[in-house]
Image (cartoon, rainbow, N blue to C red; front, side, top):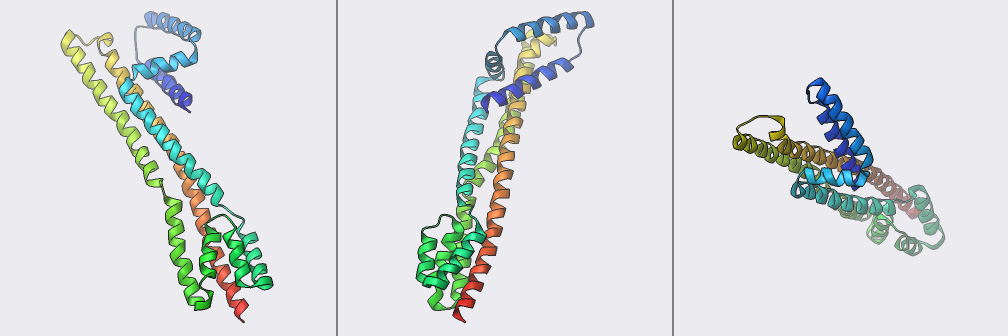
Length: 249
């Protein structure tokens, strides 16, 4: 993932550099020489060079944001995948358990089944002696608890999505300040004077935006996964109440 990010940064920086107008003959010669040198340098060294050119401090902060965001996102994805169950199969098994061995067998089945739906079923089955109304209230209350567990960590991912571009823009501002300082010190506005500051400005911005895009993709996937689990929880809860109503008749 780090190599992919730095690859995007390197390509973007090269693209921006290619857009800068220069004298035709000198530009052609310089570009040809630069491409020859870059082809001879291994890709990991080019990425390392771009990382350093972007400013080690800012690029390290952006990279840390990516690592932390990905760590939380991957943990959430694993948790949500483990929380996903075959709802129709579980409902059918609970109904069969109630028909064969009563509520206690159904509770034992739910206790030994992984996932939030089975946990909600267990809480509802524990209140069957108090009536259907208490079962529904118990399901609703414990459903809120399960939803909070599913949403755990999302605020941090959202924070990292916001921070990454801000760090990039901060690097842009610092790079521009460096460029103006160089102009003031040299008393000249030639490209060579401002090139160092502009590299920091461009590379950090590209890095921050790429990190934000990557984390946003993971965030969107997690939200869609949560929505599907939430719908399954709601449908399963209604099915459980229907099963208990039929069992009491």
